[in-house]
Image (tube, rainbow, N blue to C red; front, top):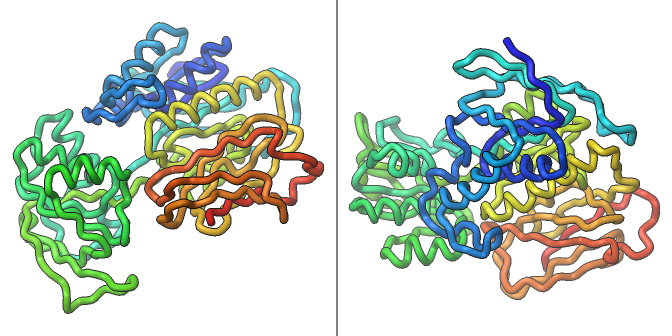
Length: 429
């Protein structure tokens, strides 16, 4: 067993972890990235399609190209990288976030890291949770039927095709219209498979509009909205699925039909990777599944921060890297003794599913992300503090599949009282 000491340990070597670590390194803090795979880049390395980097690099890149931009900078920096290393336990001082401003904070956090070389104790002053997200599976949505071979999550199928070089099946039905599923509909078509249909339980697609066009319409793949998958048939191998249309949210059994196939891909949503966070005592959000954080992206444990898909699921890697750079800056400020004087709670209002972070600082610029509960054209996003509308933003279109980002600056808080019991409410009208 060995011991290593750093100012900050970042758990996860994807876009979020690398962006946060690079920000910290640029500010002179010692930093380690702990990554369970034997390569940096995370899920980006299997996303060989383009569409990445338009905002981050003003270029359209593939996932590996996007990741490589960060990997090169990490390898040129002083950041120490632990690959093929899994954090099995995370011990921290579980006190509430402190108002103390005496730098530097103590080294009071320990990651128990296991690799083929043995056990390493990484001791640090602060931790950044950047583990990304995981896919929901068949058990999460309780599809009835037998348990044959040929049922995969869309992300696993993507890895099999793009990394391992295997084709999971020939006649495909995709359950759920999340972005990974849509992209895999196109990918499976490219390798010579037949994608019979995409089945979506909601009355609107769950993926980005551009993916609906480029991955389904361009390939003539049917999308069945307001339809529930009510059975998977097959003994040794998938033989088909039963689909039941829904009217006003209620299944209509007399209209059910069968689609023959040998493979089912599940694209039924992503959730933040939160087992390590939960085990460490981090308070989690019911709405997102990720940690609850304040205006500095700090969790309920002092000195533990979260960013990227481990905080809430983003729809673009560009937004992940943007948010994670902010996290790195906030960690650096915290290590330097900076603490907010006032933090105003945020909360979702009408037609808003969630708001992140859970607090904003009226004394500095804030970037807040939220998701709509409705599909609406010519919408207005209102920020309400008590009975006042302090900011109003017109949106050409909002829908649950597309995350909304809004900048909130000190000028948006005229005459804010020195109190934290009035929440900033986000509403879509």
